[in-house]
Each structure stands twice: as C-alpha cells, then as structure tokens.
Image (tube, rainbow, N blue to C red):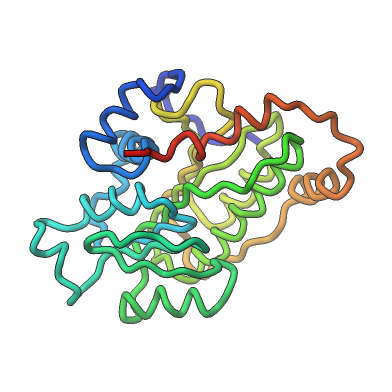
Amino acid sequence: MKLEKKRKFFKNTLYSKTDIYYRKAKEEGYRARSAYKLLQIDDEFKIFQNVTRAVDLCSAPGSWSQVLSNKLYKSDEERKSTDQLRVVSVDLQEMAPIDGVAIIQGDITTQQTLDKILGVFKGEKAELVVSDGAPDVTGFHEIDQYLQAQLLQAALTITQNMLREGGIFVAKFFKSSDLSYLYVMMKQIFRNVYVVKPQSSRASSAEAFVIGLSFIENSSLVLSDSMKTLSSYAHNPQTVSIKEENKEEEDEDDDDVLTF
C-alpha cells in the first residue's frame, strides 16, 4: 500500500545556526525554528482555515503553540483574553506561558489530560491537532522508528477523543523503507493522508510529517501488522546494527531550540 502523494513542493536544506530559519525565528520571536515547518505545511494544506480550536501535543518548547496562537486569534487583545481560549498546549515538561494558550503539563496517554483539554474548550472538540514530539533517540534506527511510531499512536489515540468530524491532524514521524504501519493507522480514521518534508526540515534528518485530512468521527484505531513487526525489533535490539549517524540525523530537536 502506498500513501497518497502530494506534489513535491518542499526542497531540502541543510541546517546550521546561521541558516535563514534560525535567524528568522530569532527575529520573529519563535522559540524554535521548527515553527516554520508548521507554517510551510499550512502554505500547502491551509490547515488553519476555519479553525477556532487547536491542540498542540508534545509541545515543548512551544514554537508550534506560538504559531497556533498567532493564527487563531485576530488581535493581541483577543489573544490576551482568557474568556475563550482557542489553543491548548500539552507536554510532560513545564513550559513558559504563551499568550492565548492554555498550557497543560501532563501525559497524553491519560484520561486526566484529555479531560483537562476538553475542559478548556468547555466540552467542545478541536478542529486541528498537531504534534512535533519525538522520543529520545537511541541510535538504533528500528528502535527509534518504533518509539516514534508509539508516540504517534498515542497522539492518534487521544486525538480520536477530541477532534471533531472533518478535522485535521499533523504529526512528525521517522521515515523508513516500510510506511505501511503509518498508512494503516492513519487511513482508519482519516479520509485523506499525505506525507511531506518541509523545506525547513534538514535534508539529513529522517523526520517527515504526516497530515490526516477529514477526520472520521467514531472510527476505531487498530494496531497494524507492520507496527507489531517494529515492536519485535524494539524488544530484540541485538538484531539491529547500530549506526551512530542515525542519532545525529533523527535528533534534530536539540539543535532546533533557540538560545537567545
């Protein structure tokens, strides 16, 4: 099975602290250059169109939440009002405040976190859920891929309970030769699925982003056979040849965070 293909509108670029996205993030006040990955995805898919409520999962340090805040509020005055918050940001780590964003320090696999998110929206569901989270990489490509897939599955599971019919989902994953697990998971709950690599994502990085359009409410998520195969790799690391360069390629998050 193959994922539906979107035209190749992103070009690869190498990353350094002197590149255009690092400089732009500093100039525009974003906490990390990863903000431009979400903005470039929006350029193609218009993911913010008609969105009034959005959730950012695994959100630290908060650059995607900053983008959501900038896009979902019409003015600074509206953004600073706490009467009707439009953005919820969730992470296990503590995060500095962001205007217009309700920050929840919690585990996305728990009912308590879900209840807190829905509580912010007063029982209403979101139209958009995004996740730029990544696990601590080990250097074993298959293990890292499995851990990232587990994180993606956790994000999809909570998303099922807080995304409205027709909603949009965007999340990071690690590329591999077999993407059938990703296709099976996503197509169970979204009518259209695309994979993209934004221009601001390093060419050497194994990361890419999956976009699910037109969420199917009340659908069920079942673990794919490919995901079970990944699990067997993760629990038998001796079968995998370690490659130190994988750690450098996949651990983009540490370099992504800006220091001012």
